[in-house]
Length: 188
Image (cartoon, rainbow, N blue to C red):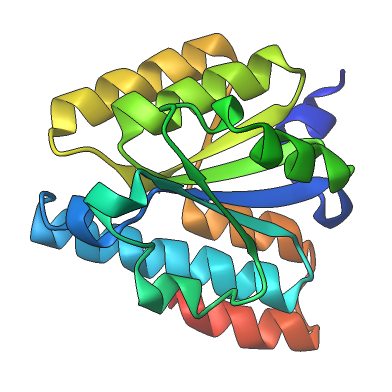
């Protein structure tokens, strides 16, 4: 595989997965880091909607952790959402089926917690042959050490570390379009 195919995102190959950004789980997080994650996940969701990129939400044990934050869910109201009990999203067969049904091979991941559900999902997606991009400024854990350790592990396993702005501008490819004018305002 060429470097370009591995490291640069393509609209037609991309799918955005938002992992477990849930009400009660958010209450255990650092407020400032959570604010940044919510802002960046929101930018990714708005960009995906504008550019017709499929979105999949997951929720860990909704009864105990609550639903996905409404401010994020409202940015992709038609997106599929799968409840799970396994830490890896890939433990939910419906999630895997939906992901594969998109026909897309680049999975852009954001959410929480980085060292548990995000890490396990990324490893399984890589093992299943997907190109995975972890949006470092849109993942979090209760502990920054746990977050950093998981990012290192995912990168060593083959995931591409990325950032919100990098994802958006790779999706856009060029300046001057109506989508560029709309989405570039989100990252200012």
